Amino acid sequence: MTTEKIAVFPGTFDPITKGHVDIVDRGSLIFDKIIIAVGVNTKKTTLYTLEKRIAWIKETFAHNSKVEVDFYEGLTVDYCKKVGATFLLRGLRNGSDFDYESHIAQLNKALNEDIETVFILSSPELSYISSTLVRDLIIHNGNYRPFLPEAVQVNL
Image (cartoon, rainbow, N blue to C red; front, side, top):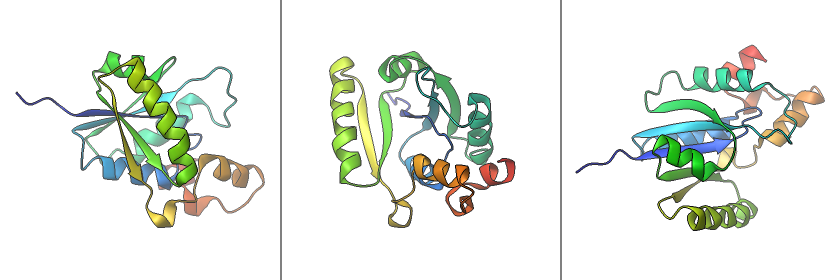
């Protein structure tokens, strides 16, 4: 019996960066389907609307039939159960990311023992990119273009 390997890649993606794209593209070599799940957190202020972020992600991955885009509220493990995913995909840029993400992975495992978190290390040339830094460049009119996929650059 073959079970489809479905991974959820959760995040705010405000905006999606080339670092995110790298993780999803490399994750596509491992999983049958990756659902990029844009988390909705009413307590978090975003620079871009949910609709715009979803549109950018869909356009960025239009070439990849393994990628779906969705949004969710609440616990990530509950969303995984809803969509039949047994894997969470997370990117790691550095040791600080590992410290933070490993605690979340352990909590998710405690909440749902069927969930496995798979970490992919960022490619070295992308390891310093974060949505937070890119947002800061955008707000202060810095050169953000090298860090964003084409779909975001064109429609920003």
